[in-house]
Length: 260
Image (cartoon, rainbow, N blue to C red; front, side, top):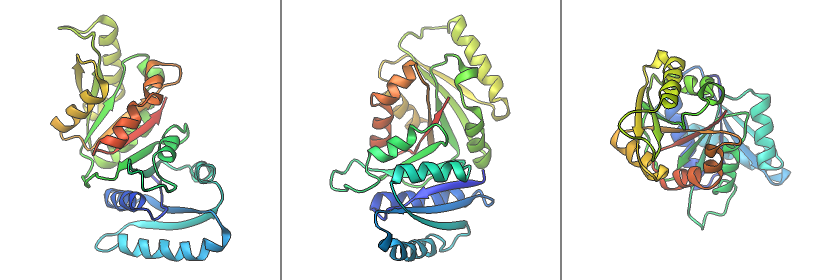
């Protein structure tokens, strides 16, 4: 992992995400952390750079990290996407909140819009998330066409960077005592794909995907939930119909969105 972007608009939400991200990435000393702010007006540039510098100094108290600062003027989503492409970013870390009073750049929709981008994984940090090192990762899968739709590279980067345990979870109301042949075959493919990480598999016969994942995450002390956005699939519909939104808003566990 080489480059991680943490957008900041100085709201409580984004400051919490910045603090969480820097604490998290101190375990990855080679990574460059870019604290990034987009100004609406050019005349605010100098003040925002000064504010970013103060934030950097606060975040570096009692810890070492490679932090760069960048402020630009323009449309937030457009400029952030451009920066992620130009810098070949490995990850974007953003905050999210369901507090209606915080009507600022990072509230809800922009974090979720960035999570839908196809060029860079996004970790969403809930406002009420307490910092934990990433030791246990939950990968949610529908166990369909796993080889062609599972973006193994960014997932492996996370697992390697934090030496994390991988828990692969499938929630399906049709699971019975034994797996069907198709499910078993897809499980074998995923086991081979992540063989270096000795994944553990769990098959939950439940109807509510959100509740099942959230309860499992609590039971297994999960530190990061990974969801895969699949185009033209059931998971794609779930992603857009509120499942990611519910996880991001209501969970206390960071959620990472990746694309097939």
